[in-house]
Image (cartoon, rainbow, N blue to C red; front, side):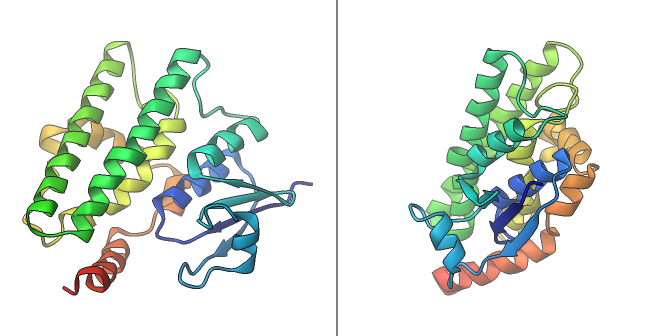
Length: 225
């Protein structure tokens, strides 16, 4: 019988990916909450290179980095497949997941951790990311019926991106900033709402208010305001 354990901290959108993936596959797992200021010996042992969460431990063997973990979950357990069947479509899904980490996440983090012109630039960068993702969704939609980024079925790119929806409220809050999802990014808006209907997403994502409270404490520690 498989023994599966997840080392994570509740606020991490990267860890949320792992939880959604396991829930979608119906994999039973043990969860260990990590305090990043006092990392457990198990985390340091299982991820000695980066010493970061999330870590998936499958039958005693660790898998690290959220997108790699998600692909591992897809391959290790059958039933529904997260990645598309065609090589080009798989490459496209991986490309946009990588974009999410390098561009979208980075812009959102800079909004929280900066002020002044640096924060204004981060806002512009985030909206540009939304625009690019909306355009990609529109291109995919032109090819036929589409419910999710992967087509008709919930898949890899959906799992990679939807955790960040729990941070949208935090990006906006108190910064004279609004993400015009409904008016300017209607395809993404509809997609977010559809993803939020899934039990796996409901279970993995914390409330936006809880995320905001955490982020404001982090900002105060970093910037003193």
